[in-house]
Amino acid sequence: MYYLENLATPVVAEYDVIVAGGGASGLIAALSAQRAGASTLLVERANCMGGTGTYGMVAQWIGFFNRRRRVVGGIASELADLVVSLGGSEGFKQYLMAEASASPIPIVHFAFNPEVVKIACDRLVEASGVQLRLHSRVVAPIQEGGRVRGIVVEDCAGRAAVAAKVVIDATGDAVVAHAAGVEMAPAEVASLRQAQPLTLMFRLSNVDVAAFRSTPRDRKRELALEGLSQGRIYWESLSFCSTPGNTDAICLMSRVSGFDATNAEDLTRAELEGRRQVQSIVAFLRERVPGFQNAVLAAIAGHIGVRETRRIAGQYTLTEADILGAIRFPDSIALGAGPLDIHEAGGTGIALHVPQQPFEIPMRCLLPQGKEGLVVTGRAISATRAANGGARHMGTAMALGEAAGVIAALQARSGTASVAAETVRAALRQRGGFVSIDDHADHFIETTT
Ligand SMILES: Cc1cc2nc3c(=O)[nH]c(=O)nc-3n(C[C@H](O)[C@H](O)[C@H](O)COP(=O)(O)OP(=O)(O)OC[C@H]3O[C@@H](n4cnc5c(N)ncnc54)[C@H](O)[C@@H]3O)c2cc1C
Image (cartoon, rainbow, N blue to C red; front, side, top):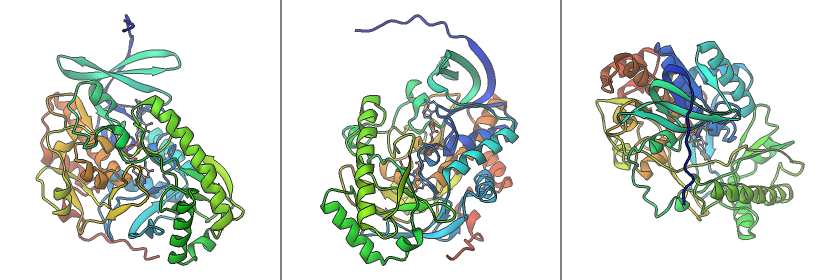
């Protein structure tokens, strides 16, 4: 049975470029398109920008460094510098990821206070000329003759249509591309309910971070296995990011499997299960884990963290072999760093692997097949499941976003979907971006802590 709607949606504005989703990738995409001369609208369903990193409270950017080599620059660097200058981070540091697991790995991360990142995002957008529309959900593309011509948004006031020459889908879930009928990559799981688990982040105040950090790794692993065997924690993780000043721990410890994150009924049950897990984990930490005795639950993320949903089947699909073999692409427009990071649904462990070298991501991964007026960036680019595990980190999403902005601005200006990769690469390099494996060679992390 269907309820047939007869809608006449007013067209309220027109832009060169509209970016759907203001997360890691979409924020940078909007700034990038505007800097490339396109009038740009950024539409975000939440009350802030930054996406999974801010309202999802995943409070560390990785993907900026492959081992010790820097692979992301450009606007993402400006954002990181601004966050540091506002006191929201102590900058890039060496960090042992998943240290209570069987296979921890050293990486370079940028831990931050998500509240300060929200403010930094505001400042960059306000200074840029990008038009920002928060509290607005993109619900459909406008299409004419098979070409995307804008979007329909819904907010408290109702529905509105906004026209654009090019739309960038940065929703992470390929919301626009999917609704426009773009072919999706095979999910490689029987159902999205078997996709990687969800994680509800939470923040504890009054933590003695130094006491935890100085606890030997073996002891942390023993404690994690103890909590797991008692059913009080949910995977081999006592991982958290500490905010500047080392007072708060933003914990990456819940693990919720079996739900499809594109389905609101599933997400509802996942959020409730996440909050049930948070209560159990907090009690275990307070009782057993050094540094957490006096911890206070300060915040729970505004949206459960989603690792995996739809990906487009674009003009090229990035594979794990491309990443591990550091395959060269003449149309590479961003560098990934890894690690390859797949959490199996229902599992309690984690498999992490850092590629030997940075890897190139071709422009074609952002371009859907047979659909003009649309560029896809961030978590939903065309990649196999395993490759996505290495390319979904926020540093990489930001580098992809900068490229997407340039591509969309050039498409909008020329009125055609075919833009020369060399033009995009030159523009990105001019802004301090890294587009080829050769570009990064002289950039090493200076911090050794
Ligand atoms: C639990 C977890 C831990 C992770 N750990 C790390 C880590 O330690 N470091 C790291 O770098 N990466 C990590 N990641 C990966 C990373 O956070 C994501 O892959 C990354 O944020 C993807 O960037 P994005 O811009 O594609 O998506 P997002 O950052 O999720 O942004 C998508 C944005 O689109 C908006 N949106 C969605 N649909 C609509 C719509 N219909 N209308 C309007 N707006 C919409 C959302 O509100 C959001 O702001 C983790 C992810 C999870 C879930």
